[in-house]
Length: 168
Image (spheres, rainbow, N blue to C red):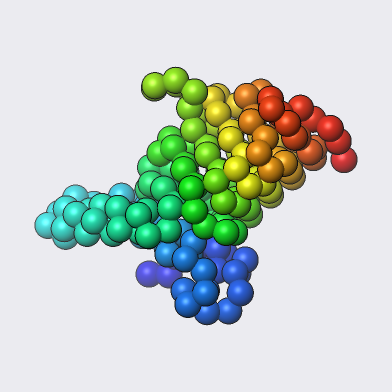
C-alpha cells in the first residue's frame, strides 16, 4: 500500500534523499509507525511494533530526531539540518511544515497541554514551541524563539518570549 503522506514528504526533498539527508529516515519510520497503529490486532502487529521501537531508538540516536508515531503530523513534512529535534508524542503539526535543527515542540509541564501547529509553518533553528499554544497557518517562527502564546495566521514571530513582529 502506497503512503500518500510520505509521497508528499518526499516531494519536498531533493532526488534520492535517503542517500543525502538523514532526516528522511526519521520521517519514513514515523509514517511506518502510523501505518502499524492503523492495522488490526493480530500476530504481525506486535512483531512490527517491536521492530519499529528498535528502529526508532536507532534512528533517534543516529540522527538526533525524536519523531514518535504518537504525534499527528500532516503530509509534506520537511526537516532541514537534522539534529536535536524533539517532537512530543501528542503534538499536532499541519501539512507542509518545515523544521530546522534544534526545534522542540512539547509541553511545559508533565502531562501539560501540547502545541497545535497549522499548515505551512516554517520553524527556525533552535526554536521552542511549548505548552497548549496554537500556531496559525502560514506562520514563520524565527530562530531561537520561544513560543509560549498563540501566534495568529499569516504572521512572523521572533524573540524570547516570541512576539509577532509582522502580519501579512
